[in-house]
Length: 338
Image (tube, rainbow, N blue to C red; front, side):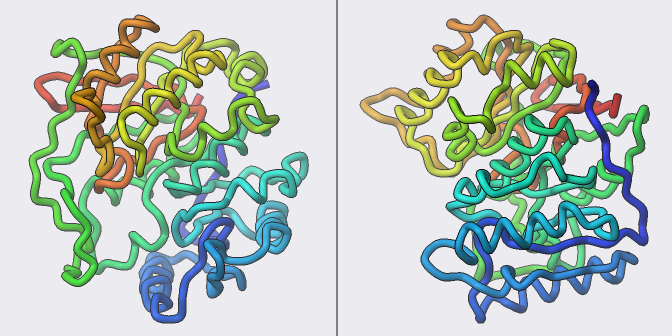
């Protein structure tokens, strides 16, 4: 078996559902503006009821969220699932998702949505896309890095797409000062390597938000070894991971658990995104974490890449063959849908 790459066209229909968090009434305009912008691009939009709900840290009870998601995943008239944003408790719905009935279609998002992306690719071999949330489409314009989600999702099987590191990134969220671009890209982007040397690595991309995908270890939705055997012919994995809220010792514990669970077996590199968290503990800082991991598993490690909760971010395809180059703090990622 091989990775299955969904097909997208400019007239495709997007299913908008909230498998994690929906929106409070005062937030509705954010989603409405994003939908309007996608409609202007030619997409058709079907919006589920869960998007307009939010109560007790979730859009709806787990079975309700799963029911709506299952309907969209199995609907041949929907070609692309685009949740509004992440949240906290997507993991609750995994046991109710009918993975054996999923039709190949793109799912795009990050944060808590990466639980769905990760589990779907591991269980089905269908490629999923880690990138901007639907809410991030609400601006009049998109920066070049964010806008690449379209190029990536429109890439056909056996073709390739190249993305370059951003020029600048956002240091902090300022929701009360929204511009036509949404983000405030003020800080110079610098991709770094633990060795301080150039990096060139090859492998199959896999990853997500470490805060949430770590909880799939030991479950039927986190069997990385089976995925490697069944879908990618034991090719090495390039992991991309981003930290939303963990301090450095919690991050360290999580990475050690991943290592002990065999997630880093036959791994060619690990890429860490920028993070608003990573608070040091007793003089132990995040670079110490990366260096400890690099010494233990003996693979190249890069950090502060364009991924996660400090936008902008690239769009990574779980399952795609990738070549990653980093030179003089500039990154280039080629993804081949093979």
